Image 1 (cartoon, rainbow, N blue to C red):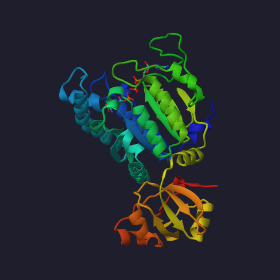
Image 2 (image 1 turned 120 degrees about the vertical axis):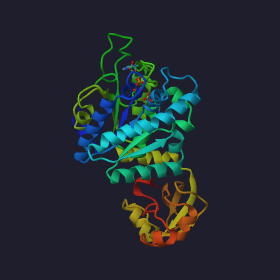
Image 3 (image 1 turned 45 degrees about the vertical axis):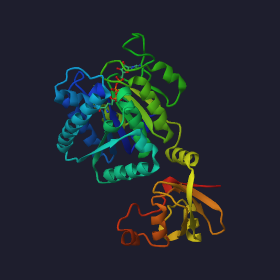
Image 4 (image 1 turned 90 degrees about the vertical axis):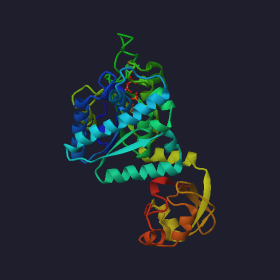
Length: 373
Ligand SMILES: Nc1ncnc2c1ncn2[C@@H]1O[C@H](COP(=O)(O)OP(=O)(O)O)[C@@H](O)[C@H]1O
Ligand SMILES: N[C@@H](CCC(=O)OP(=O)(O)O)C(=O)O
């Protein structure tokens, strides 16, 4: 295994599954949670940024409500998740505070990340939290969704978060040592795969569903999550949460469990995604200075925008037009058309005076911008 792959990861998403967070299906494994908090605090000291995606709300809620058996009704599962999420974040807050780390609760749905405006909002909140040294703890917003509760799929959420914040690595901790050639609970001859390419179709045939009634997605959702995470350039590790220090060891480049390697360089992957997904909602007319800035890889600042055409919202895809009327780039606007018209030609420090707030100093960040040939 290439030792440097995960060792060079600066920004990591760690996903801990239901099979691991809970003590036999009801209640939380407090010792395990304390241990992950300790490991993540070590990564923090090494200057790495970590987002934790944690399941466990339903299991914790069941315990709090005194339910011995997992309910079948989706509404009862949602109620249990709502009660249990309180306990879950309480435990995480306590565990991280022992290491002087602040935590933040973020509840997301897949739809939030499919909607461009909410995608940008979630992205800026998360990156701001990381900049502040806070550990965001993410779970599915079970109150407003049903499919994910039925399929128990926080693996996909982990991958979407990795895409969202352009993480370098996604670490999925579960109750098996990694991905085996077949479900080891059913096939005693199954062997551990140490390294493969994320997105390799043959892996999907090896991965089965959940092995217990606690976890729900199984290995197949992890393999698909690795494929998704790879699209934005993140490598995925699937490892056992019962090993000693799996998070620290993986983040320091040690081979633990299965590594599913992304073949795409991170920025190229994101730009490809942008190029494929942009349906233009408006146009920003740029001056020559802004055109040159964009061509040399910089972000678009309001000062270089002469006018905004069309009606669009924050997060919309817009074309950037040069003084000759040619489209030179396209990207996601941090401001809606009304705001863009107000701040056009203004310097960044003036934005707050004009709007009363600053979403971002640039109208389009260079990471959200693709040049058109
Ligand atoms: N090829 C495979 N390799 C390893 N585990 C597998 C495989 N196929 C299915 N599984 C099952 O997937 C389970 C892990 O998924 P799941 O129970 O959903 O955990 P989590 O709650 O951590 O997401 C394992 O316990 C195992 O029984
Ligand atoms: N969001 C729910 C369950 C999600 C879930 O079980 O996902 P997974 O850990 O991938 O099996 C919870 O916190 O209980």
